[in-house]
Length: 464
Ligand code: HEM
Ligand code: PLO
Image 1 (cartoon, protein in one colour):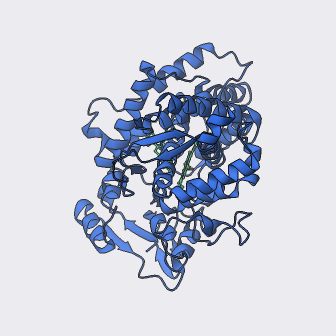
Image 2 (spheres, rainbow, N blue to C red):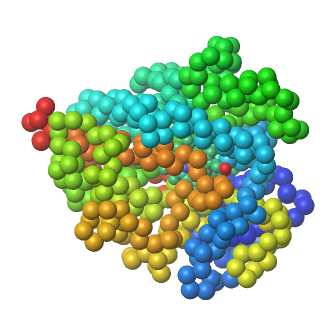
Image 3 (tube, rainbow, N blue to C red):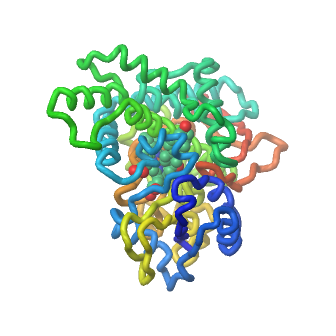
């Protein structure tokens, strides 16, 4: 079943803890899910009746693409209001001119800092090199790679947002990790108000960075996303006054960067962890990626973004990880902004619509043995080119609310995995059982903790 609906009553229009709802979903039967929602919130819940044939992804696409604008709203919840200072960010903001402007600005800034160009690639490669150093230093010991992957990804996003990065063990970085993990865990478990009852905005680090940037900003040089946003606001102030409702307050700028930071770190790190976990379970996939790399790149130089067409099996592996363990298995909830319909069903204005991406990605009618990890399904018969085996695949969503970071995320996933697999073979530490492939439902589909042995490849040792 691809779509759930929630038809809210007046009483909880504004203050329904979103993730309490979501945490109920993982691993439960749909009927259970609907009952638990009903008893929790007193809302009327319905789901579209069993879809006909392949309607599952069609309904999802109708909501996201065909009627994207009609379903472009977001529900307001206690938790997201706290995270976004009342919807002043992008992800949890309602559809409107300010949200559009914020998206446009981030898009422009991402292009300026190098979606596809050299600057961002250099930053990612610097972090990939540092990650490889750490793995080398661990000298075959069983290592919890999660903090290392998080540091690498955080540094890319920090460079992009604040023009800064962190060394291992930096107390500010440790504080940031703790804060971020705290939010992710908390959002997964319960409402944030229970944890920060008197402090609705626990984002001091972000605030501190913002204040530093505002003080240093002179309007001439744009060092990062924060400067880019300050500059846009400055130029707007010099022109005619903004139309009512179109002025970017400090909170809007801060929450925009907060979103890019939060989304940039949580999602990409999680996919990298899933990728490593699947490579431990499927050593033959790892071997194939390494063979492909040895053949097309060799060991005398580092991988570049321009190598992507040369490494279709690695690209296919990334696509398969994003299919089998979608980071955001229910996307972010959508809300209908007008009376509308899905298929033959009428949907009233204000209905909460949850797309079940998990079922779209595990639909047996669309995917051969969907539980099987098989990167080959994304390759053509010759294994030379990436292909789209089914339209039932939406890891980044689609339409007006589509992910803003898809290009950046794909750059990072490709480069980090290529750098690591060129040098190391990832293995389960000796004598330990293979770690679980079961996810933990949180704000993203989290990986359970596991350890890895990164063994330097003989070929790499010999070559260097
Ligand atoms: C939204 C997936 C990385 C920024 C989303 C959505 C999905 C998604 C499924 C929700 C779409 C919807 O509600 O219909 C992913 C995946 C990623 C990733 C799988 C990594 C592999 C990133 C990165 C950034 C980012 C690196 C930032 C640079 C955003 C933002 C939104 C969003 C701002 C909200 C868009 C809106 O509501 O208008 N992402 N994302 N994401 N993503 Fe990503
Ligand atoms: C992560 C914790 C941050 O402090 C705030 C934040 C902002 C954007 C959110 C992100 C959190 C979690 C992952 C989200 C992202 C927007 C898109 C992304 C929800 C809550 C997805 C699709 O998973």
